Length: 104
Image (cartoon, rainbow, N blue to C red; front, top):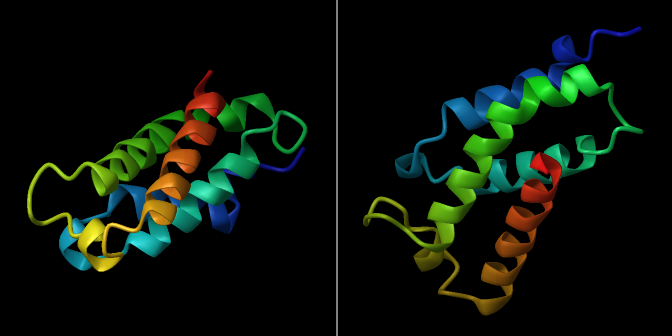
């Protein structure tokens, strides 16, 4: 069986989440990572041990997404960038729910 933990996209997602800094405004990268993580969330797509390995990354991405729409301080300017768009807020909330479902 292929070692999913060494797949480049997995490494990229883990790195993106671990190195996120709101000052760098890499919100689009986090949202893309959230999308891919949600796709990985199916036991039909990935082996269970790989999914277990991703849980800390999923938790980190959920935390980042939540702070994007409920910023703890002025460094988090996602809402300002998107001019408090209700559509974008709803989309980020949807991503959060998808990832929380992944966590069970």
